[in-house]
Amino acid sequence: MADSKSPIQRNSLATWIALAVWLAISLILQALFIDSNERLDAGAILVAGAAPILIVSSIHLMTISGYSRGVVIFRVIMAIVCGALALGELTDLDKDKTWQVALPVIGLILVLYFLLWRKKAA
Image (cartoon, rainbow, N blue to C red; front, top):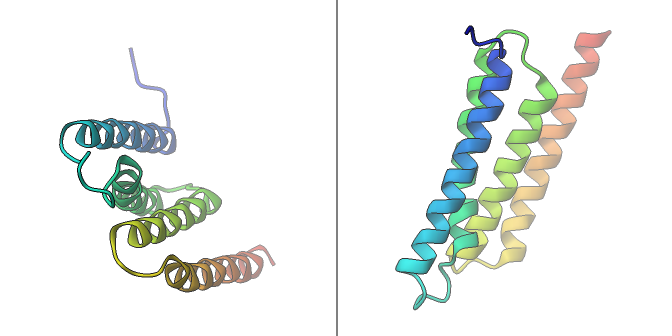
């Protein structure tokens, strides 16, 4: 039986599987090793691992012909959000400071996306 899924669908499936496996690993780590550590919990481990998974997925999508720029931008923004959450949870940095850096980066990405998209559409 031939695989009829497009490379974009396989990328999305692989991304969801990787995120689900990482969620299971983070829950197992929390249950086995991390109960005594207040700062390190399953949520912090999940967002710390989700950011690189989403970045690798978006980089792979950009190498596929016919990729959706909207999906790539969404994954990059979600990676930035996960990275900011992980940075706030796992370090002594003030959570407001991490968002003061993350939100302008997200805004810049969106502005560049819409400026470049409009230019190509015209």
